[in-house]
Image 1 (spheres, rainbow over the protein chains, first blue to last red):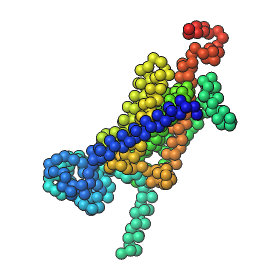
Image 2: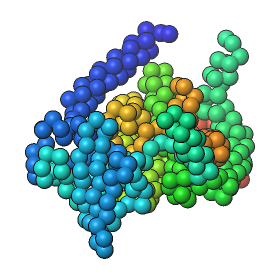
Image 3: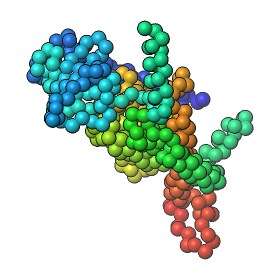
Length: 149
Length: 257
């Protein structure tokens, strides 16, 4: 390689390296702000004041979903498997809302473990399978659970 | 010189590139069309519906290959950018600038299909989460590359400026890819891990996706050849080999002084 080209290549590589470092630093500095939602464990630390708006995310605890009769009032518990926060919501739920799946609720705390949501979004995981396969997995899990009491 | 390098150097000369691209182009179009039709048929009609999302998961067969292409094409542009900046390879400038509009197309398709998919599943058309925002930034980077190129009267200067932006924009690609692992986001994590070769997509749904991926790559190849041929003719319009392409009866433009 002739020296001019080698120098140009070197400049480009150094430039990319500098750019990469700059981007990494910016992203590290903004780490908190780039989180789309906070987990119940984050809420537990007490850094989110009552009444301040934020997004709460986590899994809907199995068996926690309740709907008041003849109304759109719902409540459920969001968990990250360490801490839990109970959520109230008045409105139509997204179709994918399921116990055991994730949700992102936008709203504010009314007390340290109680969240009032204005918007609920359903999050789904990266698994895709036909219904038959999902059923077979569920059956196998149930069988396993029976065998190990 | 070994035969591969010789071929590489030869196809880098504009007339030879024009000829080669013309030869590959119809085959690439034909293969892209065949695989695209097969992939769409399998994906939209034959693959089973998802257990959770139902039929709406079929948007995956368009959305995921487009998203991969939106990033692949940008990486390709950056690669061409290095060749253009360091070795001043004319054809790589042509390829870079011809690839950009195709990248815009795939990025737009990714954003639009993602938005349409988000409504029935997540419950929203748009959220400013890291994955979606970084993909939108990619769209603007493509616009930037095109805009910068056209801002110069001298095409070769414009191409070099565009190369530089393509290299700078490279930083965004790992951010898009890892946005779902580094931060918590509305968008789910990657289903397919190339490092470990594992997939969280059932085999019955994976095959149509892989066929569509191949089809989108071929489509890019075909479209790129077609665009680059026009671009190369435009760039070299005063040269003898371009003049020789004109039918003998056509009025030849006067060579530029």
